[in-house]
Amino acid sequence: MFSGAYQAKKRRREEQERQQNQEIIRKNIAKIIDNCINAVNAGCSMKVEGVLNEVRGCLEQLDLISIDSGDPIASGIIDISEGVDSVADKLLVETKQVLEEIELSEPEFSEKTITMLDEFINTYELLGPNFDPALVNPITFPRDENNLGEHRVLLTTFDLLEGLRKIVEGKGSQARKELMRSIHSGDRPDLQVLLMLDLDKWELVFTEISRLDPRADKQSNDWKKLNRLCKDGFDARFNKLIKKKVVNADEAKCLINELLQIPFIGIQVISNHMLVFGIDFYNNSFYRSFRICEYTIPLRVSDRQVVENFLKSSLKVKCYLEKIVNNFVQIKDRIDRLPNMVGNERSGSSMSISTIF
Image (cartoon, rainbow, N blue to C red; front, side, top):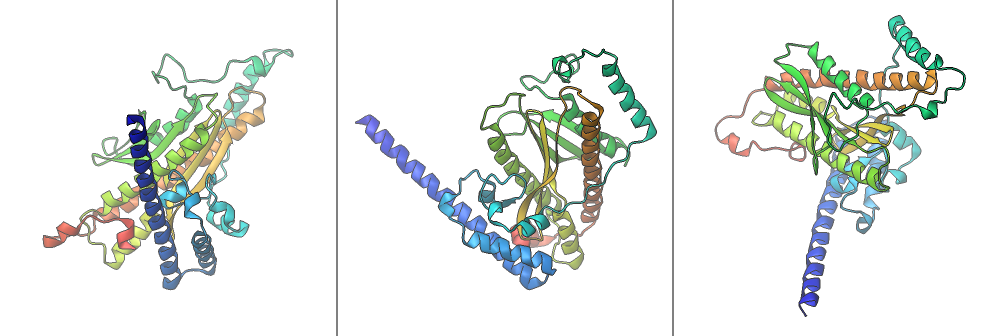
């Protein structure tokens, strides 16, 4: 009897949660549709208008019951990167290409870098004709330098993030700008990169890192988790910056538009595959999860081209992140100079992206 009552109560609770999730999903999708309509009515390029109209049409035909509460679209994100839900698959190829557009600079190796690369490769060539790269121990993070607990993190991943610290150090005093790393567990990311600006900590990058032999569902679960975390980080950064600021002036609106184009960065490492992506607010209409770069981390040295491709991909990401950090610092400084709200307006100072657009 007690078991039956417990099961009935559990089913009622699960049904309530399901209905609540469905309502949240419905509101998020309805908001995207309204934003797309408003953006088109306000005027935009024909290319962007075509994207917004197709996204709107796709969402209007979406079966809400088929959406899992963990899917990116449930949080209002159009996932162009991995497509773990079915929304992006319904878009035209041309529309996806527009949403995937991103500028990445092609790095060129200096003579010093080429020499260092040659020396590195030569160390393996000297091992003799019977050398088998498959028998070489993988490139791993030195155990005696960092205690990473249960995480087996690749040295090259940390090297990439360490590059962020060097980027910012050259832009001001160490007291004003400094990057920090920290390891988390549970609902927090495995690793995050923080930017210190005038004693304020700003989150820049969230990272999920797997073992070399992850379980089958880890890639999908980590991807959904990272998208939610990055979207929340994007919102938190926005709300913190405009808190108590007068935002109805033209200058403020222009700055907010610029801020919404500064993506929050996520990095997913599954086995030795690395995906770097961003989340921004596309044309003030919806959160867009887009791919920046993806590549394979060489665990063993097989030939020069493998190492060279990895270094070039890492430099592409480093240059992109450098531009993002610089733009963010400049926009933040300009927003800081906006006038603060005074008097009774302070009571309504809590704002979000949806309340402004």
